[in-house]
Length: 398
Image (tube, rainbow, N blue to C red; front, top):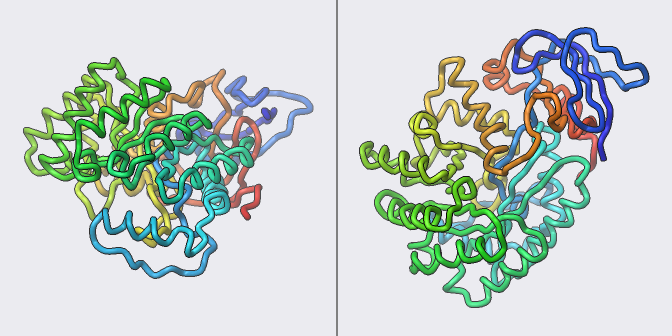
């Protein structure tokens, strides 16, 4: 559903104050002294206007929001965390429909207008996660847009039946094919990558692969992803998430890989993690790579942290990557807005006439201050509809 709205006294990206008129859910006019009799009016009070924040990597089916406190009982490795989570999901009643809705409402309050969520598919839980998050997507369809990645977190080839479940999830409406650590998860890197890209080709979908593998091992898997992307002409349709191997200390090798990724049209997703190596954002941006970010898992069985706030995530990106100059802080925000929009191939995104009116108002003197202070969102607008005000969503969570 689309709406009409007139925003008065707002400053797009911290610039001069203007009015912004929304007609039918799209930006119709930007300028001074706009008159629109009969149109609802919101006084921006000089707030900075930014495009809707884009949560380009999270796991809506995994959070523990609203549940009793669950001590972290997982072992230290990624495999330990995967196994622990698969075991406990039903034991502690992590119902994906309910839990995803709770995180979605928090994201709306914090100004996200789009979410890409990886959702587990495995032979223990089947399509439980996909069906639950799809129900949430339908429930909040007028409040936020949600895109699903079918995610074989527990492995594909080593768990017969998983690929068939992934196919079913794609038929149900999941938009993106996921994968994870081709060498260490299935221990068949060629088979894993061939399967992921085979599904992408069969269903005409993009790819987003988790790659936690470190150093040369990760670069080997990354090379396989590069080869498939080039061979299948999938430039602009492949994202590598985390890409910890790009945080290795051999800068000549990393620099060559960054150039190759840029030439192949492969995007990167980084959460700017504090405890792991991470892609060098400045170098990746300079190479011409599209970079996006996300909250990853929040308050889940892996980590007790996270707030589903992509403005705060921009601050993390800035701090982790030494983005200290004003234009660099603006880049951190762009990663959490335009970068995510490019990765998700969002049409009609941004602060231009004709685009969807997915907007956020923040009280700050400029964009860098908005990122640094991360104040509550004054107003969040989705296709012209006010969906959050003063840090609170106007919809309810279960």
